[in-house]
Length: 123
Image (cartoon, rainbow, N blue to C red; front, side, top):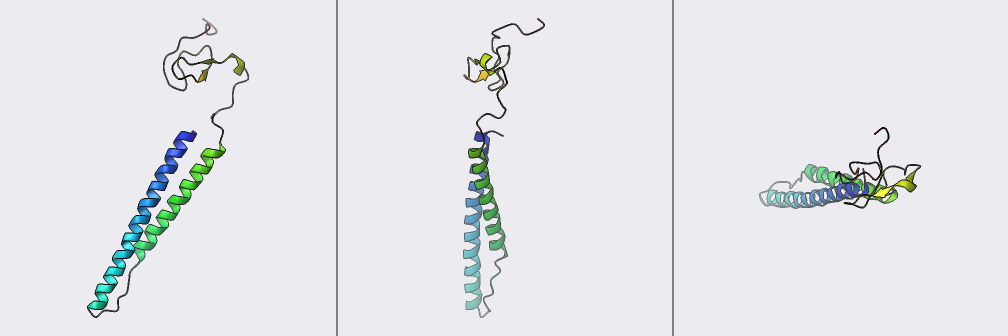
């Protein structure tokens, strides 16, 4: 997985954590309101905070996943594979400017058809 995908994943986890946190806050407010109404009606005002605990746990897990995704995207190298031993012979793709083999017919980065710069072996 490349850095861009990891950052997108981290953003999704962070957004999920924020949404779960907001839902936990709203569930807590609702539980307090229910307890208040129960006390007004002569009840004990017991509050069931199970949903608050579950949503809080989900928010915490999503936040941790977001942090881990961001840390792993910053610690990895930009290239997903090591450069081949003959990297001095690489040429730039005319569409995306990434380095590709001179014999390549399709750019491995952008998927566009490219003109080979030398004949492929065996042809």
